[in-house]
Length: 317
Image (cartoon, rainbow, N blue to C red; front, side, top):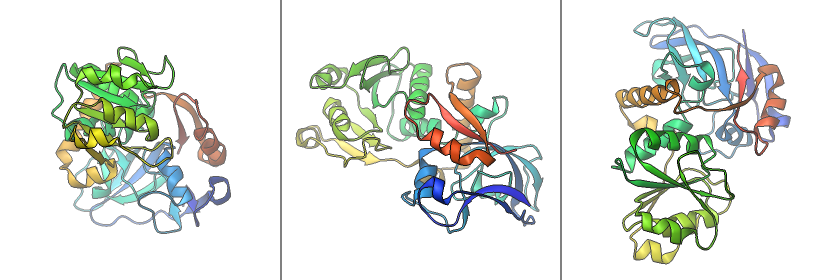
């Protein structure tokens, strides 16, 4: 038996989250047994708990879509060595002491970086990397636009742009929110006038509402507005002029589905580059606090606070 954080129904976290003993299944062909170390609490996890995410598990289910764990046993036809660090994929459930999963439902994580960084590497930094990959080419000297630069995705985008010589302009609510070295432009009527001359062909939207409108107006013709979040919790509206005369490309991006369509070698290359940025101090993903799984309700409450300054992690050991 092993401890896991589970739900039997969707609803408010305090009402539906349970810490339970669950059986540790026997290994089958192509499976690995993983001992989890750390797991972050992401907005997607909260959406799953509440029943509003784009993909929901069959209930009852163990919660958690990210983390770092260590392979402690392998089934037949598995070549991964004992000790391989992995992240369970969506639907496996990472808020637990131990799990069994198909190799295809795990992503190998790089070694040589702290566990609290490895636990956060495969979703938010991966999103920033994949957007640059999928909506490029973006080369040294180009401008990229974003909003919500203080988020984990925003920090990761800033680190990647810095390492590649790409210039990043950040649309912020107030001064001091953008990472060091980025052009900071405060939201308002004049923001697009400042951003438009940069000639950016890519903007990463995490907010929606008026912030997304400003990014859309600021892009060069044939530019791409890529939406990965909706922090404003309002429908996305676009300016007609930018859509028609700027031939704006507007699309969404979901890193979970991206993983499903790429070759494993591309994921390995991405994670290797991100880990290198962590080792070199270019990318650091802050941690607000770490809680034991027994205190998961308090951990989730902390994760829902604004201005917490980093991810809240669960200690799964």
